Amino acid sequence: MSFGLPSLKAKPTQAPDYGFHEGDFGVPDLMTSGLASAKSTVENVHALQPSEQNYRQNIHGMNMSILRNNQGLHAPLRIAMELKSAKKVGHLPFLKSHNVMHDSLTGRDLEIGPEDLFNTGEFLEVSRQPHSVVERSLGIL
Image (cartoon, rainbow, N blue to C red; front, side):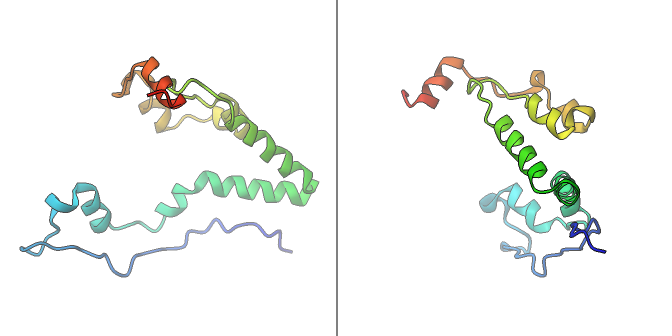
């Protein structure tokens, strides 16, 4: 009996060619390509990294397919509509959105992760003038 659920087993993915752009001495030339590009070409990817990056999407897809099998098509459509309307809640452009409604709909408000501890507003290095940000979003500047 198959429910058509996505597999939770990790599938290994590895790039066959790293695409090094080597300089004169056989190492990547960081002055022209930058540090971020060298890290992306040199770093080996663990087999579980893609699975962990898409964990929330995989769980959401699995829950929606189970909900569709149990209650019909209306239940996932209703939840998708509620999530879409929660994402459209507007804020002023210079304020950081906390996504409280979206987090409560997805159950994210019951979890504590590293992004909750290290991504707080008092540690943000970017502070802009509110009037100039609003004027730029309105196309005045």
